[in-house]
Structure formats: C-alpha cells, structure tokens
Length: 266
Image (tube, rainbow, N blue to C red; front, side, top):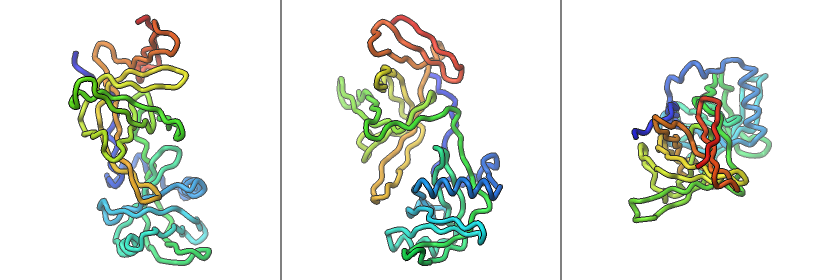
C-alpha cells in the first residue's frame, strides 16, 4: 500500500530570506510594537543572523522606544560575536511570538550602555515577517514531563528501538529532539510504526517522514537538533490510530483536515 504524505508546506530554515513572502509582512507600526513588546516581556531569546550566512549571535530585546524609533537589545556574552554583529552589513533577528516565527532586520546598530549594562541600539523595524506556514495548530509539550516517541530502528538490529522527546505535536506531525544527533535523523527518511504516549489518553501509532532538521541554540551556548516530522497515511486509510488507555478493544481513528474521528473495535 503506497504511503501518502500529508500536504504540509516545507518550513524555511531560520535564516531563509525568501524576499520574504509578502503575505506574512506586518507593516503597521502599532502592531509591530505590540508583538515586539510581547517578545520583550516574555524574555524571548532572539537569534541574530549575520550577512545572510549561518553565523549567528544570541541576544534579547531590552527596550522599545517608539517615540525615537529605536530599540535596545542586549549584547552577546561572546565578545567576538559582538564584534561581528557591529561589523555586519546585514543583521536579521529571528524570534517567536505565540509559537509563530517573527523575523525582522536590525539596522544602524550602535554599541551603548543601557541601565549600566552593555547593550546595542538599533532602529525599530519598519516591517516584520510573521511567518505561520503550518496548516495545523501545534501544541507545545510539557518540559518537566515531556512526551516520548519510541521509534523502531531495524538498521541497528532485530527489535532495536530508540526514544526521543516530543517538542510539539499537531494533527499533521511532530517536532522531535535529536539530542547530540544520537537518533541520527536524515531528511526524507521514513520511520514506520512509531508510538507516542499521551498520558491519561492513550498511545498514538504513526509512521513519520523527516522533513527538516536544524540546530536550535540555547542561552548556555549549547544547542540541540530539532527535527520536524510529518505523519504518513495510507491512501485507503488516511488516519492516525489512537489506542485508548483502559480500553484494549477500542481505537480512535483521527482524520487530519476532515474535522472528524471514528471509533472502531480492534
């Protein structure tokens, strides 16, 4: 039976510059200020990409000054990263708000002192990209008790399997952590018969295709590999099977995009 891949758009890499699709452009100064204020108030980490390359520095938004058309971001703890930031001809800042990626340029960067701490001043962006490309709403999983995805690894031997943390999940797929590359995900690779335990609900039985992988930086200077995976469906049964806890003779079939579910005996 030929697998069918759910039609989800490919998310771009963090530093992808598509000219960026104008559908996602926000040009209203009030709306831009509102979103950036939320980023500041939440202490959201910001990745600054330099000159269109994969070179980056980590920062955060300290202050917004709409009256003067400026903003203040913190300097990176890495002195060499700060020098590269100030010398860069193009700096693109990437962060998120309400699980949606925000992307905007930082121009006229100047080193300053802000409230007694080293900082950088830049012009407020005149435009901001609010990029939400996914067809399904995603739910972030708990940090303290994360969901676990168990994947069969037949290439490692009969019965071999591995476990990895689920970072977020939707009806269309999951984001999985490949910490230090131990799982060894490869883009385009298919993993069949995977199981995701949902506490107090049941277990999802799914097959996955790896769509993208990229390193996500942390404040401590380390990083982890985040891999986005889509659910695979068969042409004759385009559904996800949910085995309900405490009901061994029952399963729920979930049909993405249809808004319906079906209960069946196993």
